[in-house]
Length: 299
Ligand code: CMP
Image 1: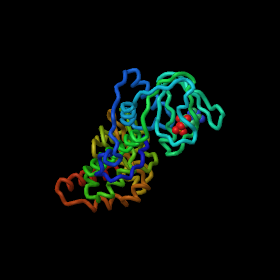
Image 2: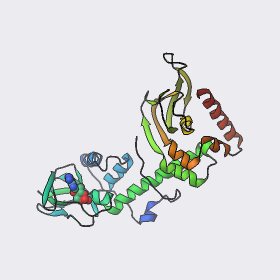
Image 3: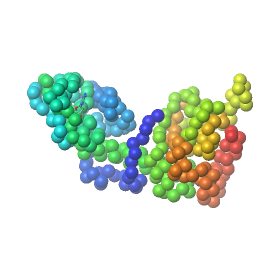
């Protein structure tokens, strides 16, 4: 499961350069360097959870720089302004004069002060002449913010397109988009198993999901329905039912947006409330009825 970053911006504020005044610039790289930077970012303990798009943009915006042997790249206690990937050479990391480790090619350093808004946690010195890829704090933070804002806006739009959520106020949709987590499944993966306990609700944002049920243990699994983008399931868990009433498996690659019972209750109350807040549009009504029919069959 990919944990989403918490973001607290208004859903309409889509252009982060208006917020930060930073224009992102990309720098040409060889295929080898691009791949090395990506691998370095994905390999770093603190950055490996970034989204793929964020990794690509950070890589794209890194510029080349070099230093000679013996130079201090980072001084412990300073305000940090740059994140680096080592392209060539070796550096040494020391803290209060004591050696922590040496770092070789294809590694990230200088990320902690930027990610956690603290002063430099250690000193980094070039053991050889070094070549580096660098991105400054503002560029880095703009990328983090832009991805978050775009994703937030996409989630809010998507939620608005789901009939059951259409009439929710904008601020509730926006908060819901904040707490959703994105999950990915491959063909035949179980998303929910009948009989298992669970407290999560799913909305399909991409792909198809097969719903099947077994009347009693040992019986054949009967396919009840195929769900697709915009459909939701697992709502019984939101009403306080722990035990899953059907099995749901991915048909091909599937992406779901997931919310747990506690977050859902805090934001929306129970699902009956959501349905009673629907607008009267015939299409919406028909869709709600179809959902209700379906869920009454599987519950
Ligand atoms: P930052 O604190 O921004 O600047 C110093 C960098 O040294 C830090 O980010 C990490 O990238 C790196 N660093 C700090 N402590 C260690 C450690 N124990 N092992 C490896 N690298 C470290």
